[in-house]
Each structure stands twice: as structure tokens, then as C-alpha cells.
Image (cartoon, rainbow, N blue to C red):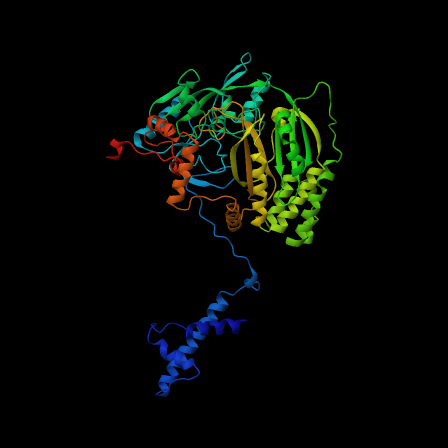
Length: 566
């Protein structure tokens, strides 16, 4: 090996460019197969000395810094960055798909402090984007220039049991609010899959649960206090400036920072959840009936299988008590997934790791995350995981009963990319069935493009929203909307692998690659949403774009006033 390394060193020396220092040229000729004639013994000894010096230096370097025996097979050690400065905050969204570093991250503890912060930012033309809990998978809340978070404004201000309303500071998390409402016998009308959102962000981005008769959560807002850069704190409701109220209910944080909000609640109630496995033919046959009969319903589609998991939730019946015990126990339902994980560990890792007793303590989503982490972009590996998931759901069929806030939650798994689409699908009386057509086309695309698509693809429904910036906005009271969430898990911390997963994820969708495509997207948004009215309100409430960021400006570009342009 040493001789090989030395010969390679000499080979590299011999192939050096001709513009090197002139004293190298005779040496190279001396080492070639056709040396030039040497004029004298002194000159020969001189160049022989150079050669010996070169060899000596190579040997000294090699023995001073020896290669370990496994050098050729050793993995590279990632470069470790120096710690961030103390005044620099690293902020990422919940899915870990977007991250920014900022020196400005304010946490006011009162409306007055928030108002002062926005007024100063407005005066100095600085950014101060409302952050919330950062749950949005598209990073809508993030900007390096500066952010404000209301985590210290998390109090319940008033509960009116008679009217079934609650007034809260917007920084309170949904889970904390639900716990506070419990003692008053109240709860929220509907929930998204997770409960970690701050209420301000929960309403501002048009979050939703499922149920064709239940609207997105912004419809629960009956009044709010909005703190704006230019006009300070304004109160909005159906009675006080209704046009701006409806626009700001789902304002994407671009019209002001929601500081307080009053929500319409419902009586705390129990639900019976029925989970069963179906297929495309059965779903098509029963879809209209299921949408109409069930208070909450969702489908979990499993790519590369004929399995559709149907989850229906309804109030308990006075006349019929379902059998709450499942045919299979938890261990039986998980056994197929555990077996696949052990087999995969033998293939991708070691025999010893496959015998780790910890495997038997992992939940289904933990097992799925670990399985995907072994080879997330291998289509055949993902298909095996999907088939194991289908088997898991078949053995998890049955009923369970609990409080609505417990039943309507859903374990989404670990970090992930999410692409969600919302589109109208007729009414309950006359559904168009476009929702099922969309899923059929999507699954065909996945198979045609050989996308390693993990499960599930979640499909839900809501009633319409009267908030014009909501994806489910409509003037027709009976309209219903389908929401389809496509995911690609990020089960690894390896930067290269996460990049590859991200590239594969965008096989589902395209993002604007140039000005023409961006202009086309802006035109589509303008056709769907009242962009002019939204931007007019932004110009009045935030003329210096304090609350904006690059993403908001790309989607809803706002022209500067003439006096500012000058």
C-alpha cells in the first residue's frame, strides 16, 4: 500500500502542467523512460539529490500522519458549525422543512407591548411577522428579518356558559384552551389533527377538521382584536366593520396580529368512532350516503394497495350500543409491522439490531417512521410498508368512544412535507363525485411516475366558509369542500437524504420556476380569491409591509403607493 501511494504521488508529479517552476522540468525528464543526456556528473548528482529529497519528504509525511487501516472504508465526519451567537435565534416550523435565523424574535406579554412593537417596526420600516406555533408546513410564518410570537399572551379572558362563547388571548394553544373549557362543559366545534397551534394561527390559516356539515375553524370566530402597524388596535365583528372582519378572519397574518379572539363553542360531547377497511368500489357505492349520514368522516388512502381506511365519528346512539372491543388485540394488530421491521433491520442493519426488545414497545407510527428511515426512496420498500399498514388497519377495525377532543385527534407521525389541496365538490344533496375522481387520478399518477409514496393520503370534507380568503370560501350555503393532504415523511436527520426526499415530494406538484410561471400562479389566485380587496386592506393597515414576508409577497404582490415609489 505504501509503495502504491508513493507511485501515485510520483505519477501526479509527473503529470503536472508545464507552467510549473523551471527546475522541475529536468527532474521529470530524469524520471521518464527516455531521459535527456546529462552533461556532467555534478549535474547528475544534483538531480539525484532532488529525487532523494522528494522521496524522503513523502516518506516523512506518510509516517508522521499515517492512514488508519480502515481509511478507505471510513465514513466522512460531517462538518460541525460553530455555535450560533447568543443573540441569533434559530426558528423552524413544526415539520422541520423550513428554518430561519433571526436576531429579532419578540414575545410581548400584553396588547400594549404588542402595539408598541408594531408601531416601532412601522416607524422604522422593519419586518415583524406573526409566528404563532410555526405549524404551517410551507413556512408561511417565517422571515429572517424579524418575528413576533404571542406565547406569553395565553390567558382565557372570559367564558360565557349561557352563550357558549370564550374569549382568549391569541397565544393560547388549542390543547390548553380545550382543557380550560372542560370545567365549563364546553369544547370547540371541530379540531385539526393536532392541538399544538396557537389559536391566532389556528384561525388565520383556515385550519379545519372533517365533517361535511361543519365549516373550517375560522367560522368559529365571532369577534377579534387585531393589532395593526398603521392603525393600532381595532375591534372587528359581524357588527363592527363586517367586511374587514370576514377578510381578517383568515388573513394569513398579513392584515394585523390577532391579539384576542372570541370563539363560538359547543357543549362538550362524546363521539363513537367506527374504523373499518374498504375499497374503491365500495366507497363509490356508499360515498354520498356516508357524507350525509356521518357527523365526521375521513378516508385514509394507502397507495399501491386497494385499501381505503374509513373513519366515521358520530354522537352515541340512545338505542344502540356498539361493541367497543376489537377482534384483535394491539399486539396482534402490530405484529405484521413489527415482523417487517425486524426483517428490514436484518437487510439494512444487523441481525443483533433486529432482536432489540424495544421494538415491541414502539407504536404503529413509530414503527412506520423507523421503517421508512431505512430506505425512504426505495419504491419496493415503501410498498412493503404500505401493505403492512393496510394489514394493521384490517386488524384495527372496530369502535371506540371518548370525548370529541380526544377522538378527533390523529397521530400524523414525525416530520413531513405536506401538500394540501381544497376544492368544491358539489353539495350534500348533489355531490359531484369530483373528490373521488381526484383520488383515482392521483393514485394513477403515483404508480405511473413510480413515486415511493407512503401512506396515508388523508381525505376530509368541510362545509363552506364565509371568510373570502379561506380555501373553502363560497357564497352558496350548501356547498361542501374536499381537502386532500399528501405527505412525504422526513424520518431521517441526514441532510442529503432529506434533500432527496424533498425532490421526490415535488413530483406531486410543481412550483413556479420563472417569472412567467409565477405570474400564472398569481393570476389563478386572483381568480379564486379577492386579492385586490385583500391588498387594499393590507395597504391601509400595513403600508410599510411590516407583517409581510417573501412568500406572501410572491403570492399576493402589493404595489407601493405613488408617494412611496417617488
